[in-house]
Image 1 (tube, rainbow, N blue to C red):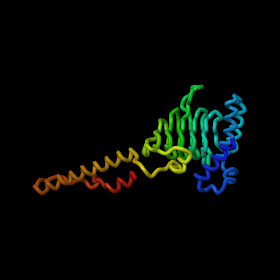
Image 2 (image 1 turned 45 degrees about the horizontal axis):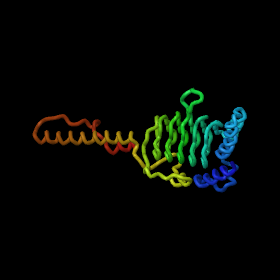
Image 3 (image 1 turned 180 degrees about the vertical axis):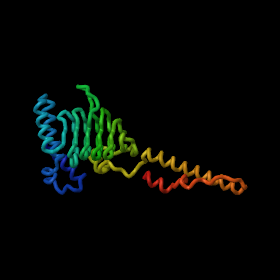
Image 4 (image 1 turned 90 degrees about the horizontal axis):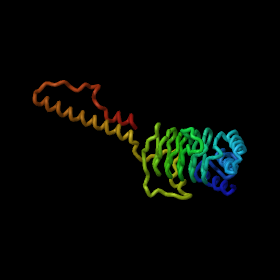
Length: 251
């Protein structure tokens, strides 16, 4: 347990530029306290001391504002940053080197007892602030979930999910890195990525470009009619496509 604590502190120092030294992390980071107490609660849960496990979990929630059910499985070097409002359900599984920000919920969507109801985060997943991951499915290795995303279906390894409901905007190189150094190599704070195409924006840009192309064809036809001496109505000014303005609106 104390070896795991040392690993957690080292991983936080590697991932958080605000962390100055190990003593500060140990004494001032609620995510460290929550995971340490969860290790105790989880062991009690496995020994079938359910009430005592829940009591430890409840005390941890009171102290840290992070609620981790004692039945949840938490891997090594997991970093809960800031942490306030994080909720991790009973059958959730969080893999090694994951990073979870404040306000995240790993929740269940069924009432069936004895079944796995909560999501599984594989190694190196980053979950941005306020994200809700709801249901029994897998968020693949080194995937990212953007802030305030609502994820209700599996996320492929190396992908980024954004929006409500979440959509996949990027899949990384299939030769994705694994291992203890994956978090530092692929780390992206709050699940933000500057690479990839949002499929919704891609569709909007295609529609805008198509409308602009049609307008250009209409202008060509009108100029041809005018040169042939055939009368026609001009294209109303308000119907003209401002390609630059529309592209700015969709980002």
